[in-house]
Length: 316
Image (cartoon, rainbow, N blue to C red; front, side, top):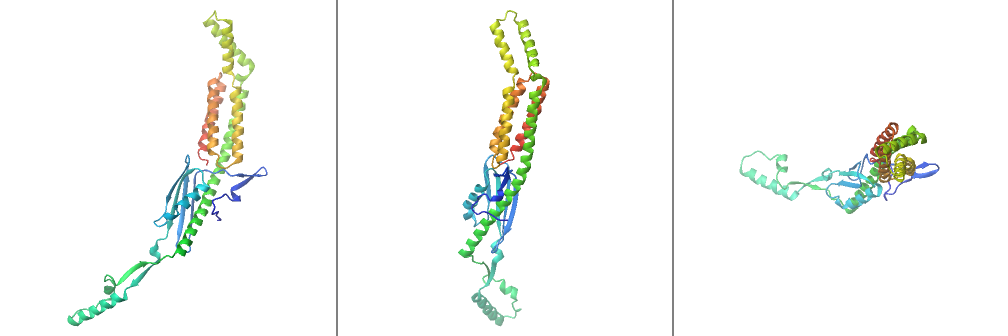
């Protein structure tokens, strides 16, 4: 898997749409693991879940704190949203430790044992007994020179780039699936908008009949109602029954949401705003509904909008 050390998007992050290039949708949920190493084995594990912004929680072994600024910069250059856990594990130096025998101390121990053996009758010393004497044997870490350290740093950062590539791939795969679901929800909203448009309660004769009934109710309640006041009330009732503006806005929001999905990239926040506008228009439509069938359409649309918002929360 290739990586971009500068954190930029590669051409495979783009997909063709209508003869042009656009950024693919990405979910905020993903996982990746990459390992390697020529001098010391290392492994990266990246996990990301939904988040309002970008929150990176980084865990590196002791001695690698020097890389933290570069690691965070690389992650921020590739991801814009999500709670990200990045963990680096590196093979312990004990794998490259060496045993050192202090010849001077060993010679002194052997001489001392020989003198003691000449004075008393005792069993000859064993090898494990001699080696267990403090100072005879020690364990030292193999020294890591500056060149080796620089090589390890480059490998670790290159591994991070590869892990970010893999994480982005899993996020794109889920983002593609979510994009399909969002398109389906938008199709449902568009269909329900047409259904609200065609509901019998929207027909002029139905509006006139209901308006006449409401005016008659007003006259019964206030027989001496002023004609101007009656006209004002009639206009108010007619305005309340008109959902033309809400239907037009719903159509416009569907178009805007589809355009965003077609553009791709980090569009989660903008889609969430459109979803809020959908919710606002549907609530207004339900409050204006003067017929059970129109109310039913509004409630169905509200359920679809809620599903739309839930899916949008997963997008970067």
